[in-house]
Amino acid sequence: MAKYSIKNVHARRVWDSRGRPTVEVEVELEGGAKGIAIAPAGASRGRFEAIDLRDGGKTFGGWDVTNAVKAVDVEIAEVLKGQDVREQERLDKFMIELDGTSNKQRLGGNATVAASMALAHAAAAYEGVPLWQYLRGDGEGEVFLPLPEIQIFGGGAHASRRVDVQDFMVIATGAKSFREALDFTAEVYLSAGRIMADAGKLAGVADEGGYWPDFDTNEEAMETLVRAIEGAGFTPGQEVSISLDIAASEFGENGKYTLAKDDRTMSSEELCAMLVDWMERYPVVSIEDPLGEDDPDGLMKFTWAVGEKLQVVGDDVLVTNAERVRAAAKDKLCNSLLCKPNQAGTLTEAKAAFDAAEKAGMGRIVSARSGETEDSTIVHMAVGWGAPQLKVGSFTRSERMVKWNEGLRIADTLPDRDGPLMPKSAFHWR
Ligand code: PGA
Ligand code: ZN
Image (tube, rainbow, N blue to C red; front, side, top):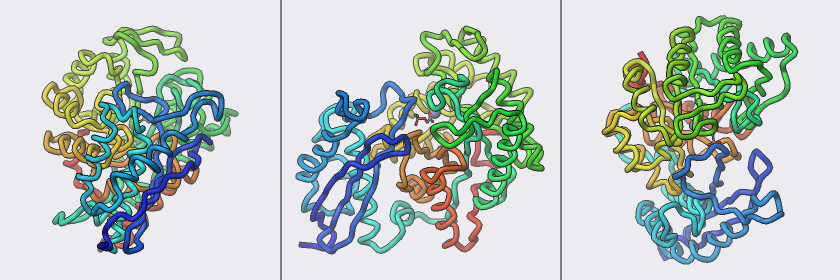
């Protein structure tokens, strides 16, 4: 047996950052190399994402994954054993065909994505190179680190809807390196914490480690964010800018949006107008899912109005699907892709969506989920694939920090050890 042949594929149940079960897969090669990866889990999920297979019933709130674990140990292991681990596309295709559904509902996207990522880790270990380098292949030119997009306040489905907007984030638009972007963000996070504590509003952190937003209105988060940036000694819109994930599908249906916190129901046009108004008054460079996944007309109009100067990111509407990315590019639905491997269910499909976005001139943000673990595969994907940006939640808690720290470790091996960022022209804000 060749050293790169897959000897064994084994899954086990481990636990994610919300204390819920998830799937870890370990791939072992004949030569002894191993790869290991863990599936993340979303809370504000797009309707067309790959399905996480959950057991249902009473145990662990129905979140258990014994069936997904079994799918790996029995069916997936069977088709992968004996294969050449370096043939990622072929192996992912085996799993896609074995599942046989359009959304991985039979084997579970949690089973397939963990297996897919573990295969890549094993292949990189066999080749004796870091995963990012393996994924980059023969790519020429400079290696870039992705510009971080980091949450300061968490809301929506990640904070019991304490505010309606899901992510109030910052992007260190003036940073010269990955390291400096993290330095800037660390100061802003501390500054925001001081402001919250002084106002008696420091109530803990939300699912992704951003402050639990004990605010009276959605806009109060915007005002506080500007103060936090200033309090850290930066000029808002210069060194540090604001980025939002509205996750509008969570509070809207059929073009009607209810902002519970603001006690207001809005039409698609009114929500657009509110966001444009925020853009005019706050230094916002990026807005994700500004309208719901069932409101493509609204989204198209929004992008038509502001897409020349604002990064408009599709998460729920694109669900990391190459076909959807191509259609969105054609219709100018949005100008950037949020790329989450578990929305697709395999690395190959996530890469296809990523490549489709690149080909269409769209922005690309590799992203974690709200339910995460110590797995840092996505950082290697971002660097290896040449993603301009990376989103992994906030700047606390180890399931988030493991990603930022892995980026620093990768940067430390490059000629520019601070981690060079892509040139300004790579980003969709002006
Ligand atoms: P999710 O949130 O992982 O809960 O879907 C992240 C996002 O919406 O970007
Ligand atoms: Zn999102």
